[in-house]
Image (cartoon, rainbow, N blue to C red; front, side, top):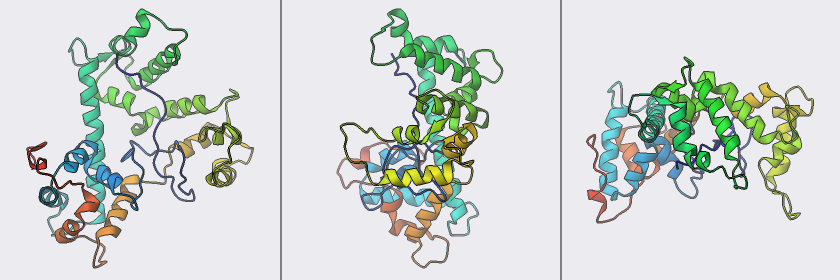
Length: 314
């Protein structure tokens, strides 16, 4: 049985007045550039996935340094859209967004093969339900660790929202909206609804401070709270709870989890430019990028890397 969709989104860095904290977060802007922690003091793995996409980043991780640099050089030539010999911040951003979209497309393609059982070019709700919950439907487990009945109902509700023409058959665009709702405008309400259902423990239709903090931390055993908790209380009071009534409604929750004023691809482009722009002229030459190749792509100095994952584009 294919593992059911779990309705907990991995989130990226909070923008603007919100400071990043070391805890579980729900804020996201479209599909995350990477599910990895962004910590350049430790490694550049987040940057690699943001720049290349998850699949390509894994491929580059297996390559010797010289092959990694060679392939990066090919990418640089592709990024330079106006062929002026430089890569601008905007060209970096366009490339990162392209990698993000390609990751979503590849994910949809991989799952499509699992769910389009009759190979008719659409995925019906019945097909998705039977593949995902087949074992449960055959033998419902009331004492299971997971409430599969509830999960199935949530999946069906999301499927129906993604299904724009209401025929209970998803084409690839509709299936992409189902799998990646944060990337589609008409799916934002369902993302908010699912988030509030997860956090609103007293079922009053709002998220209060206790529920907000409780969603980020497991406070068991009377352990001391991490330092970031007090910072998040302040974030809640000053920025999340806009009307100052002590709780977040649907609109405030939407502003929290799907902020409109933050572009992760733009932020990553600025970061890569800052890391690599040796002469500080606001644009990158090919040599500047290759000099900092470890920021953009990964590599391992191995004997077998050369033979792995050869792609036509390289």
